Amino acid sequence: MAEALSQRRAAGFAPEAPVELHVNGRRHRLHLDARVTLLDALRDSLGLTGTKKGCDQGTCGACTVHADGRRVLSCLTLAAQCEGREVTTIEGLTAPDGGPHPLQESFVRHDAFQCGYCTPGQIMSAAALLEEGRADSDEDVREFMSGNLCRCGAYTNIVAAVRDVAAAGGADASV
Amino acid sequence: MLPFEYARVTGVDEAVNLLAADPSASYLAGGTTQLDLMKDGVLGPERLVDITRLPLRGVTRDADGLHIGALTTMEELAADPVVAGELPVVREALLLGASAQLRNMATIGGNLLQRARCRYFRDPTVPDCNKREPGSGCAAVRNTARMHAILGVSERCIALHASDLAVALVALDAVVRLHGTSGSRSVPLTQFYREAGTSPDVENVLLHGELITGVTIPPLPAEAATGYLKVRDRASYEFALASAAVVLVMRDDVIAQARVGLGGIGSKPWRSLEAEQVLTGAAASGEIFREAAAAAVQGAWTVPGTAFKVELAQRTLVRALRNVSGGAR
Image 1 (cartoon, chains in turn red, cyan):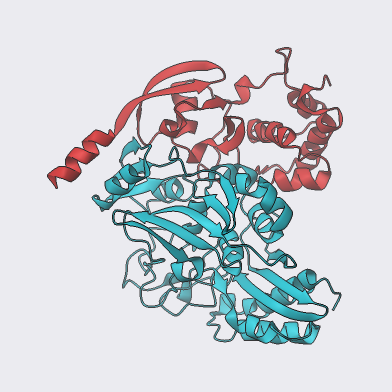
Image 2 (tube, chains in turn brown, green):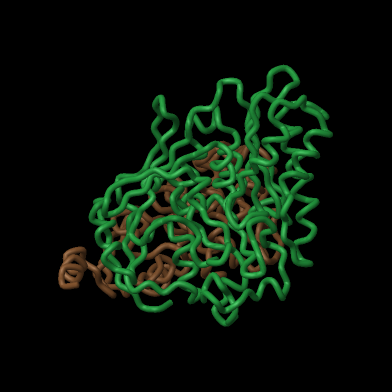
């Protein structure tokens, strides 16, 4: 029993701990309860409220961010798990020239939203989709963005907005 | 979520020793099941050991087959050139599961250990769930059931094992590698899971603290054809109502070898030796496919909400056999 306890202590178990997060190219030193998800750390500790909390159980995709370049759900990721990983949120998504990302422009042009709550997640997911090379057809966009739900039902315009950017050459396109 | 303590480990033995000495601790990998169930109050470990940095990631190949590190993500495995080129049944099972985001998080080891999607299991306010509280009964048997199993179940529990990947892996004779405090062992995936039986709370042969370190898929005969067919309520991002993983070796029109996995219907990823027995050595035909499918669902145990699956599972297997055998039979 004593051995188990000293093992635990050596492993560094703690109910709260310092966590260093790299978000959108900036370092942040935080002190967080172990339960804090990446989503809550972004919104409540860093004030990056672009990432949305929809279902908070990994179903709706509103909380989609990139971790080391891959799209993930920030609601089912502990903030502590992200130490040393590069996190990108909607606030950090820009065109190469620093302006709005072509997807952001395209979503506006196509009116690819109604209430807009799912939009940051849709755009982060679509940005990854373009990188993955999976935006070659409407069917592929629908299939590989099926983890982003839109309760308003703006899917038709979302698909059109994504396809437009893909046709113009992806994220580097000057649309 | 109940409070817990968190620690990240970098060595496999360190992880295993921590868990084995601590009944109130759990591993944390992709988190897509673990954190979800902790938020719902179904799981409440006092300590989480984050294993995501362990060196168990990646795919290698040698004469014994394809070795998949347990922390390889579903998307990484689907993108592996060998999987993409030679094992369509694995690639299809992976890409028809979950969403791209979840597949970027979920690991292969975690996928095999995913917990039941039964709504009564996932709702701690429901008192009767033998999987959560042994001896308390089964709410699903008396209430609305649909996403539930018909094979390997009884009135004690009808929860479904919802993994698509595991269905493909049992058809491929995959072997899981486990590591514990007393060393490593290998277990065929078909012997890894337990049917609901009298103890629905015990889902597999893992000892507390034992860690899945990898999965090996033995080589297939060069002429083998494989495929996965999934039938569900939505076109995408949904669990299977019925699915079939099929491996066939054809010699002209005769089925020289057949392996059949069934999903959406079993308390564990279901390997149907009964269907294989009907198929092996027979000339491929619609009639023999239907006979095999009928053999596969012998012994089905249904409630009103799941009775439709007896027919659906058969039709799913027949179509999968038709697709993989390459004939419009």
